[in-house]
Length: 403
Image 1 (cartoon, helix red, strand yellow):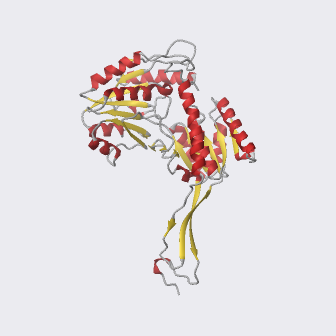
Image 2 (cartoon, helix red, strand yellow):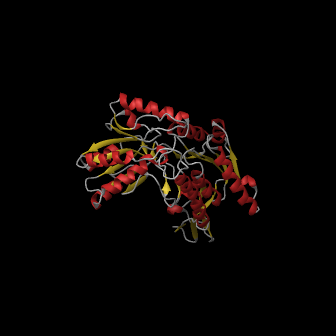
Image 3 (cartoon, rainbow, N blue to C red):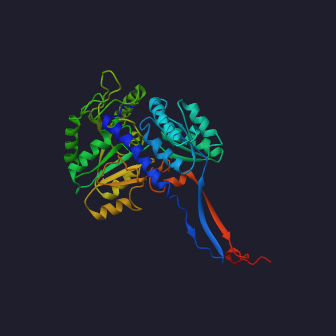
């Protein structure tokens, strides 16, 4: 898809890690034992497979996101129908061959895992099919909403991982070197095409010029070019359309009062290369509320933690966020109920590069779904509350006496 080699290897490692995680998890799909108020009764939870899980993935992580979903779905006893991104068909085919080999080696039918290469009509067919009780969709908020509406019409379930508009907040007591390195990776990694890419940088007014100066200096040293070459940090955008959207985004930024501090142009060469861009802009600008899928970073000032949290929470999306500080009171305010409203709330690390052990996903227009670690597996199963009467009497709940 155009990401640099180190990130590509990291993505493959991520699906390997998900396989390891899921194999261990397969022995721990536990339900709760619940004390019954009725004598000689036992109450507990059973978790059973949903059946067939539809997985629709995006171009930016063409195999890792499959792993977040399919590894869990399969160990939970489901079959998987996968539609990979239409622009990364070779990854879809390669992954399917690997999975097919594992199934064959273990004398399992190949139909346990089915993959399609195709455009929107395949995704629409998956969304409409009542035989698929759960559809996991990764992509834009606009398309995700359409998928959700289609699936809801047949009372199916949706697991949505949609757009992000992620902020890093740098307080006045932060380790500035750590913050700058983190922002560089979060804003430039995968050419700004991660859902967890840092798109907004909120700097305390007392360290604004210092951090911005360091960051601008770091941007000058970014090697742009062939993603397979050692030392390259910024490869091309995925498609020509991505490059055109970058150009349109820059025009909108300028028209809304944004000031380009560095970058802001496409690179006239073979391939879809653009300059990594830093923009000074007000948080109220409409363009800041949207996800521009490219290496564009909006920089803005704040005076108080309260103001920073308000800016962080002011966008429709709610995927990832991070704050850089050494103060425990700020940390616990940030991760608490009056803090960041995102599904991923970090401290002193970037917004991107999540570990698979935690549940991955976000709130608001990011869709509310959770994938990968923690108890995400429960979304791929049907919960039954079971009550067994092993006595001879029929006591009723709430002490009801019926005849």
